[in-house]
Structures are given as C-alpha cells and as structure tokens.
Length: 480
Image 1 (cartoon, one colour):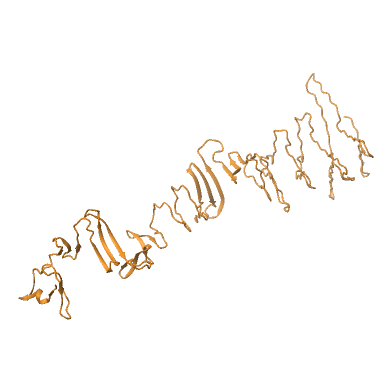
Image 2 (cartoon, rainbow, N blue to C red; image 1 turned 90 degrees about the horizontal axis):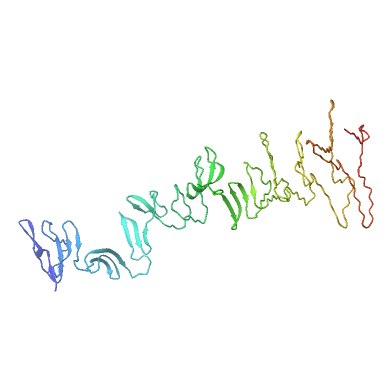
C-alpha cells in the first residue's frame, strides 16, 4: 500500500502564514510528488527550525537524528551495533564507512574506511583526496601515494617529499636505512657500532684551516686520529698526520701495526720503526732519502734495499748536513762475532768506493786499539781450480796510485809527503817491566809450492823502480 501526499495535504495559508501538520503517520511508503517545474522541500521539525528531526526504529530508539545546526547522526545503541554508511551500486561495488565497537559492547574500537570492487585491475576502489579542485593524495593497493609536488608535513613543516627528506628534520630515530647514493653530514655520527658502505667515504671541508679528521677509539684520550692538515689560512694539503692517544703508561701502547694477509709485518712504536716476523725492508728507486729526526730504527729481520736493474740510482744514501754538531753520518754496531759490515759484490763492480771531498781529514781510518791477536787489515785472494783465469802485468791485487798534476805558471808547490807510511812504535812506561818486541815492520814473502806438474816462478819479492827524472834515492836506509 502507498500513500501519496501532495502540497495541499501538507500545508495551507491562514492569515498569510504557512501552517504545517503536527504529525503525519504514513506506512509503509511515503510518496511525495511536486507539480511540474517546482522543487520539493521537506521541512522536519518545528516552524522555527529549533528542534531536531529524529528517525526512530520500531522500538522507538533514535536511529537517525538531524540537528538544527546541520549535524546528522546515525546512532545504534546496541552491543556490536557497528553503524555504517554505504554508497555504491551493489554490495560488491561500494564504499562504506563504519564505526566498529569493542566486542560485546557499544564502545568505539576503531573506524573502518573500506571499498569493495569486483575488478581485478590494480588500484580499483582507491581513495582519492582532492582539495580545492586539485588531487593531493591517493590511498591505493600500494599504500599512500602523494601526487607530484606533494609533501608530508608536520605542523606546517615539510618532512618528506618524493625525493627529499625535509631540511627541517633535525633528529631521527631510524635504526636502518637502505642504500644511500650519497650522504652529507654536518655533525658527528654517534651511537653507531658499525658503519658499512660499498663505495668511498668522503669528508671534504672546503674552509680555510678546516683540516678534517677521522677519529677511532673509545674517547678523546684513547683514539686514533687521521688528519689532513691544511696550510695555514688555506685549503691546500700541507701533510697527513697519523696520531694515537692513550692514557696508558705501558711502553709501545698506541703503536701502529701494519698487517699484510693476517701477518704482522711492521710496527711503529715508541722506539721507532720495527720490521717484525722475520720480514725484510725493501726500498726501490732512490730508497730512503731522508731520516728527518734522530732515533734508533730497529729491524728484527734483514734490511734489504733493492733497485731495479734498469735504474741508475743510489739505493741507499745517507746525507749528513749538520756542520754544527758534526755527528756520525752512519754507524753500524755489532756486539756479536759475525761481520759488522759485509759487502758482497756478485758483478764486475767496485765493492767499496770511497769518494771523499775532504782536504784535511782522513779518507779511511781504521781504529783497532783493543786488538790483540786479530788483523787490523786482512786482504786475501785465494783461487783454486783446473783452469784459472790469466792475470797480466798491471793487474795488481793491491794498487796504491797517487798522481798530482800542477798546471801553475808561477810560484812553487811544496809536495813533500809519503805515499805509504808504515810505522811501528813500541813504548814501555812502567819501571821494572819488560817488553819484548819482535817481528818485522814490513814483511814480504813469496811462497812457492810444486806438488805436481811444472811451476815456473820468477816473482820478485821486492821491486823498486826510480824514475830517471828523479834525483832522490831508490832506497834510503837510515837509523835514528
């Protein structure tokens, strides 16, 4: 059954005022029609609009309530009522907004915004938020999607956009992030236990006297500092400093240790540079050119200085330029019984070449004051074999040549010196003591032994040759 209510049935005019029905009870259907060209206006409430319109269910419980301030309420005062608004074509194609109560109660648990769509096409049924005619935000299958140019803001400050973390973000509680193509820091990294990266770690401080540092350790008192030190008032590199700091008083704490393939090779500690583990010290090209400070350089293994065959250079050179203190340029000490200095020449080269620019100092000085049974100077040349190499005249085993050429055109050069001076001195200074001196000041011996074959010996034990231009004696024997 239907009821049709037309305009004349609802209101009329009495004294120029519009009157309304107090109550209209119609069921089960209300059918309201307006004359052609006119709108339908249904006013619910009193004429002043002060009261509210309430739709009751069969138990006279308010279900929909419209207040005079424009508020519409959908109420369901029953346990698990969960009232909702649904819009769409069917249950399978709709959006609904629903208040979900706590189970078995009427208290609000959460609000559900839900869409239903039969289509399998991605993002069908998405929520789109449009502000003032512009699309701002979609919530779709992938999550929240801000439109181009959009940003996430908190209290008016942008904190995140598609490509930029907001400049106003001053702190973060992030525990991990994905791969960063670049990371610029304006302060310190604190609290991190590890820092891993697949590329380069760059720290550029483009300010005068910036001198950036990398610190590793437990505190400023226990750390390693690697610092690029700038020239004063500039940004150019002056040097690289490797600095350790430790409060420990134990010797060598804070030392540098260089380990290659899990093997300790080199230590730099309180005593200087130490090659460890039986390793060697090798330098190529010009090798070590400068030892800037004094100190002891210790190696537990051999020190091996090597240059390439194609390079004509000095592999090991010590230059002493201190003319004030005049220290020893190089010293080799030996407390054992081995050779203090061993020169091993495997090629046709001079094993020891002393080139002195001195005018008054000794070129070679041998000091064997504590010597008792050993030789002050021992030179041997012992060969044996089935076909020894021939030696011709002039190939001397010991050759001392002194040549002085004077090109002056006036004046006189005093040239009074001995080419070889061998002096033996025996002195007694104690009363009652006895010294027995024997032997020779100069002993020349030629030993010839023929055990088989033929041996022809025409060796002169002593040969003295005086030039005919000389007026001196070939042999001068004197007894002082």
